[in-house]
Image 1 (cartoon, rainbow, N blue to C red):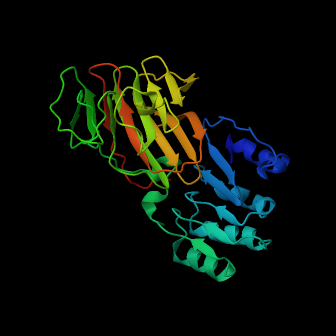
Image 2: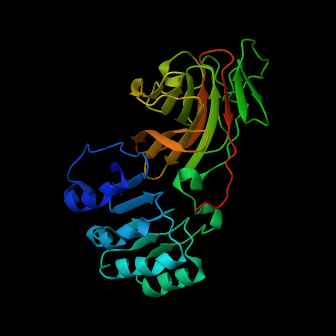
Image 3: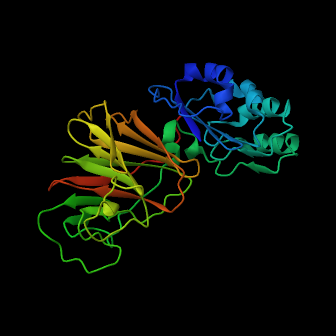
Length: 328
């Protein structure tokens, strides 16, 4: 799969000038130019994924004819409202000989929009308009916010959980936790209880130095000193290391230093599209502005969980509450 992180002004030229790339005839093209109006395009097999945080997403509908070779078009969470359905139907019905599936989940087409879609695109094998609630019509990955809780059965004995298992603190005194096969017995790590599926977004506030915010396969090893247990040091985990001076992304013991500095607000966001194989990390400002740090692509094949790793005592991580409110 090729994934492209693009500025809004680049979208048209990429679609027009890099048609061969979008068809998968080239590989290795990936940019991280997602600063102010991030726009994400991904091609996976016969499916085109378009995930946008720009309210003007429908401006490119006329260009969908270039991509109509696809059997499926995914416009999940692209801010498509009732008035945009007519333009969408027009763009897709003009030349839709190959189109079999249309994903409009997490939009707000309304009853009339759903009707015009179903009446006009009767040939489709699948039309998905699920979860069309107002709270999902938000900018950026916040629309996919999920609630996570820490799993006490996985917590290392030098980690203390609090605030209804939404905060973990690295302490110097060993805790008398009962033995459990899921507990990390050497490395100071903990997992969240919930399995991450589909599209998910969560935020954490961290304190201390060298705190790791991770996504890992549930089956990661729990016992012993080997690298197979350590978040970010094996093929089963991906980790963002947060310190006072820099961010570093780790996977399979390979590191990528991020130029952006953490600043005064120690808050990080994680976006996962499990089915499309996209994992993105963000820093979050005091005004809730997201700054893209890094995006990884991988074909995820096993159940995923959020997790945290610590190096220094008195460090902590808190899972943030994200309000599900409407934002234009």
